[in-house]
Image (cartoon, rainbow, N blue to C red; front, side):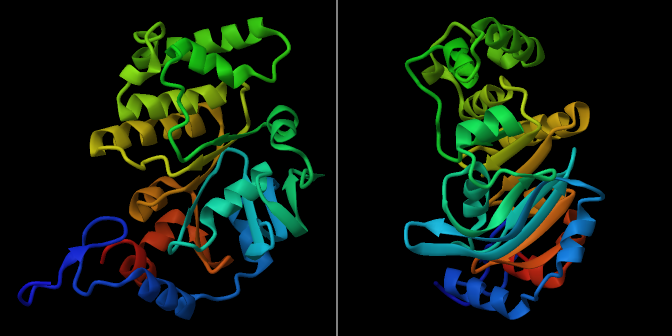
Length: 285
C-alpha cells in the first residue's frame, strides 16, 4: 500500500487501521471463541423454538463443515449468522433445508424431527422456505410466471394465483411489471421477486442467504424494510446469513458468530454490535 496510510474498508463498512486478511480474521475469531452453553442458546429464543438444531454435524460428501451446531429461534424472531469466510454460515441454512449430508444431530421444527425430510417436504409440511443467495430469477419468464413458480407444490393452482394476487396488492413495484419479462427488473426488484416467490406457500420460516449481496445501498434499505415488515406484520421467522455484519446484526433479534463450523459467540443482535471483538473483526472498527 502506498505511503503510510493503512486504512481500508472493513468487513461490514467503516474503516480499520490495520488491514486483516481473511486468514487473520479467522485466527483472531478462533481466539475469542468460547463454548456457548445450550441453555444460553435456548434462552435467546424466548420460549419454545420454531426451528432448532441439536448438536448438528453436517457437510458435503465426505467433508464435514458443521461440528456440533446448536441453534434456536422462536416464532416471529430474526436470527443473523456472521463470521469469517468458510465458517459454515450458509451451510447452516443448507442443513436446515436439506441440502447437506447430516452425519449426526437433529433439525427440529418445534418438537418435530425434520432432519431427514426433503427440501420439498420441509417447504410443504414444515413451512420452511429457502431464498437462494444467487440470482434465481428466470429472466425470460414474466414477473407473474416467476412468482407462480413458488407454488409448484400446490395441487390447486387457483391457490397459487390467489397468493400471487395478494403479493401484487402488497408490492406495487412487482404489480407494475407483472406482465414484463423478469430481465427488465433492477437488482432490488429481482430480490423482491425472489422473496415474494417464497411467500406463495405462506411459509412460517424464511431462510435468507445474503439478502444484500450485489445491491446498491438504497436497494439494500428496501430489502431490509421488506424483511422487517414480514417479521413484524406477518410474524415470519427469519434466519439470515449476511455479509454486511453491521446491517445484519442491527436487523436481527439474535446474532451468532460462527468460527470453523462452531458457534463461537451468541447474543442479542444489538449486544453483539457493542462487543469490541466483534466490532474489530467484522464491523470495520
